[in-house]
Structures are given as C-alpha cells and as structure tokens.
Image 1 (cartoon, protein in one colour):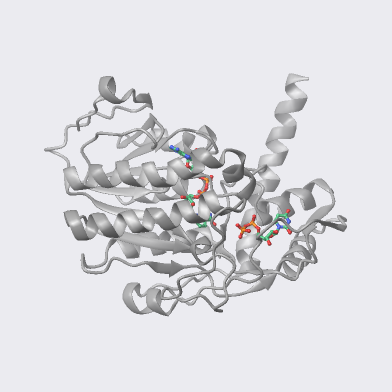
Image 2 (cartoon, helix red, strand yellow; image 1 turned 120 degrees about the horizontal axis):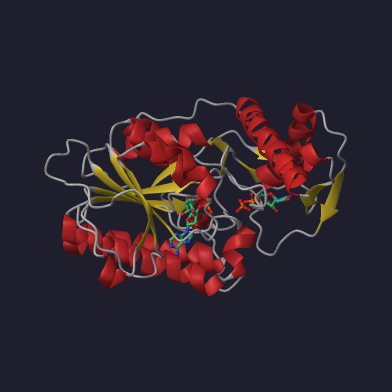
Length: 346
Ligand code: NAD
Ligand code: UDP
C-alpha cells in the first residue's frame, strides 16, 4: 500500500500503512473518523471480518482509547490527518465518517465543521475516483432539519435553516450528499449514502454532549439530568451494533443502489421518556431539571426504514432498554476506571 507522507503530511500513529497489497486477500478499507464513536466500532467489525483497515482521524473528538485494543491486529494502521487536506492512499473501499456529530462539538468551530463536511467529501471522492474505490458517506437525519413530514422518508427534501447554529452541520452534510451524487454522475464513482438517525452506545465520550451519554453520565454521577425545553421533543434511538450491521449491508449492495437510505430505529421516544428510562435502569436518585431549548432543535424525528428493509434486508434488533443497559454498563466501568486513575495520581 502506498502512503505518501511527504506530500500530505500524514502522521502514522501506529501500524505499518505500507502493507504489500498484491498478496493480500483482504480488502483495504479506509475509515475516516475511525477513532470516534461509530468509526471505532466499524474498524473493529471490519478487522474481525478479515479486512485491512486504515483508520484516519484528526482526534478532535475521537479517542485513542477507542482503538487501543485494535493494535493487536496486524492489518490495522492509524493515520493522524485532517480530511480538510487531500489524502493519497491505495484503497478498495472508503467509509467517510470524519465529522464531529454532537451539537456542542460541531458548533464549537462551525467553519471547520463545514470544511470537514465539504472539503472532506471532495478530497475523499477524488481519492475514490482515482483508486476506483467504493465510497460510503455517513450522512444524517439532520438533512431533514426540523421535519414537516413525519416519519421521515428519503424523498422528503427537508426543512433546514441555512444560517442557524446547526447549519454548519446540516448544510455541510447536504452539500456532501450533492458532491457524492455529482461524482457518481460525472466520474462514475460508486457511492453509498446512509442517513443516520440518533445512535448511541459504548465508545461515546462521557463529555460528548449528546442526550444519551449526557443522561447516563449524569444519572451515574447522581447529578441533575438536564432536560432542554419541556422534554416533549422526540428522537428515535438506534443501538450502535444495529447501525454497523446496516453500514455493512449497505456497502454490500449492488453498485446501482446508491441510497440515500435511512438507517435508524423507528421506535420514537420523548426526551422525558428517555430520562425516565435512564433513571430507572441506573437506580439513580438524580432529579430532572429544565434548561433552555437550543435554537432550531428539531421537534420530532423518526425514520421511515422501508427502503432499508427492502433494499438491504436490514432492520434494528436491539430494543432501547437492552441498548441502554449495555451503554450504562460501559459508562459505569469507564467512570470507575477514571475515578481510580484520579485517586492514584492524587
Ligand atoms: P464522533 O464525534 O464520535 O466521531 C467523529 C470522528 O471524526 C472523531 O474521531 C473525530 O476526531 C473525527 N474527525 C472530526 N473531524 C475530522 C476531520 N476534519 N478530519 C479527520 N477526522 C475528523 O461522532 P460519531 O457519532 O462517531 O459520528 C460519526 C459520523 O456519523 C459523523 O460523520 C456523523 O456526522 C455521522 N452521524 C452520526 C450520528 C450518530 O447518532 N452517532 C447520526 C448522524 C450522523
Ligand atoms: N437534550 C437534552 N438534554 C441534554 C442533551 C440533549 O434534553 O443534555 C435534547 C436536545 O435538545 C434534543 C435531543 O435531546 O432535543 C437530542 O439531542 P442530541 O444532542 O443528542 O442530538 P440531536 O439534537 O442532534 O438529535
């Protein structure tokens, strides 16, 4: 595998990215955002399936801890790189997941978020055009904005503010979809676009800021649970393992199927219902408190997954209850380990 470090200032963290390609039977797969929540699960899944994985990440929200255990695979390598800058490696497939997904994180540097979405997509599509790699885009339910059609079907064009606090992400992801389709039409790049709905599970950061990790961490620490607005807004929560199944099933479809396809769990809950479930499952004494509803916070969200069911044969299997139990177990262990480390260094 070629790795042009001088031209693109790529910094290999560990692993040898110059694996000889000719003798490999496994596919060479680039996962951008591979140290993040979803990316780390995807890297693990691909490695266990026998593939050779290059994880590319700028470590802005991703964590070395999420991929530490993958070092044991010889077929795994990591490159520290920002997708805003071009990248040149020899690959058979690309999964483009690089982008902060949590509102506080993507709003912290909105210009860089937009660059990540647009320049990132452009750079990776150019790589796909050059190498002939099939390319997957982690798009989002945010392309529907604050939806006026419910549940959301792929044919719905959305209700999106072009200059609000969420726009850097929403419009960035919409532009990325446009680029994907234009590269497909103009340069015959094989594309697969997944519109991901709220997904949760192990490997989220405790300070990620999204609702499930916030509530679980607050409940475990006995802190107040922060309900934004009156908590009547709804979301549909998908457990990470189900989502990664969907990624793989989408990537394995016939080249004629491009998506966009919704991937998410159609179970719909209010934010208050989620808080109640988390309090019950953790046995926490935390109380709920109200905080202002963020600007442009979507009122309701639920995927119509008929297209995924039909074209991918995919539907989620893990209930909210079962997924929350696994997530609580993860954060409980993580917070205990952090507390022990803190005590040891004190
Ligand atoms: P995350 O923040 O945990 O992971 C994002 C990863 O991308 C991190 O490792 C981060 O360091 C890396 N990254 C960010 N900007 C980068 C850049 N410019 N160059 C290189 N690396 C960069 O978020 P996640 O939940 O794992 O989301 C992964 C992808 O899925 C994102 O593209 C997100 O938009 C999309 N998505 C996620 C959800 C969800 O519910 N988790 C929903 C919709 C879409
Ligand atoms: N939310 C909340 N408390 C929190 C974090 C989020 O009430 O501590 C709400 C937020 O206002 C939104 C929903 O939970 O209505 C989902 O928020 P998240 O940031 O997880 O994702 P998104 O809004 O992007 O779907």
